[in-house]
Image (tube, rainbow, N blue to C red; front, side, top):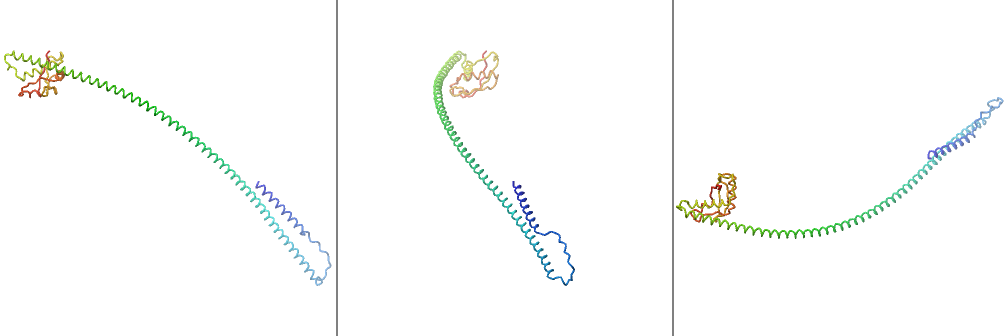
Length: 312
């Protein structure tokens, strides 16, 4: 559109220039000089000097007129050109201003529309954020309520379980305590019965050995040490569980006793390992062994070795 307007303006200006130039040229006499009339030759002196002067003056005036018209034409062309250029410039400026105005109006409309969209988007975002926050708060409150209820339920269940466990534990402890008391009583009764049995065996052995020594040809045949060693061997033998394959084997035990005859420790010194293990169990099962009352020899029965052979 801009190029078409420029072309139209140029054609109009050019046509106007052509018309003006045609009018100016129409006033100029381009006809050939007319044949000079034949005149009679007269003497040069007869030609009036005034005639030559008038002719020169007319030529000069015509030349000046031509020059003036040419100058007027040039000025008119320059004016028309400047006018056309000014009109074109004004038209271009007007078009540019209109375009700038349209661009500004478009930009303003776009900015307004963009601002409206941004405002709507911001409002929608705020609304969505509020809705989300409300939903999250509601969900959080529901979750907190559910957690609180679950905790309360769990605490109640835990308390009930702990009470049940505590009651069961108390019952178990009571039963265990009663069982322990019963076991302790049974053990004490068993130990008492065993002690009484061992004491009875000791009395019987004492009686047997007393009978043997009373019937012996000489009480001095057996020393006091040999007598008590025989008593110890006999008591161990009564608690000894032997097997047929132990026949003909022997074992030496190292025994430590308390002042009252309580067996403190029993170790194998030499002999068959299996036999010694069985004899050791028998010595520990006896709990107490007889010791002499004679202070001169009692020290020999605190830590001593004794040889044992199964009676098979």
